[in-house]
Length: 173
Image (cartoon, rainbow, N blue to C red):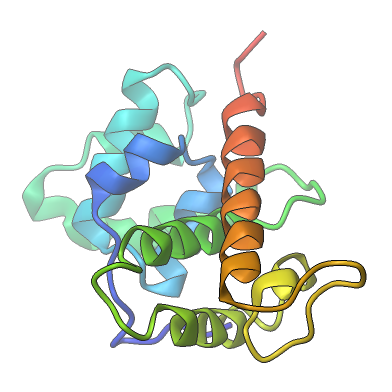
C-alpha cells in the first residue's frame, strides 16, 4: 500500500464517531493519506481526552500548536517505531472506515459496488472482504447477486464495528 495524494480524506468527526484509533492506526492513516497533519493533531487530542493514550508521541501530537504542525511526520515516525509489536494490522481499521463510508454513500453513488473493487485493490486484496467483492464468486453455499452481496457487506461492517468497540486500549484495565 502506498500513499496516494489523490486519496480522499476521511473527516475527523466520522472517524471519532466509529472508532478510537490506536497509535499505530493513527500513524497508518496518516501514511495512507486518509488524514493530514491537522487531523492527526485533532485525533491525538481526542485520544488523550478520552484517556486512551499513555504519555507518548500521541500526547505530544495532541499539544502541538499551529506553528508546530511540521513536527507531525517525526512524531508519527516515533509512533511507528515505538508502538507495541503485535499481530494486529493497523490498516484493518482504515479498511473498515473506507468501506463504512462507501456503505453510507451507496445510495448517492451509482457505482458504489465498483468502489468495493477499488478498495479491494487499494488494500492489497484482503481475504476478509472477498465475500462481497462484486467480481468474485459468492462464498460457497451463499447466494450471488446484489442483495446478497450487500447483506455480506453489512455483516462485515457490523462485525468490525463490534470488534473495534470491544478491544482494549493501552491503559485500560
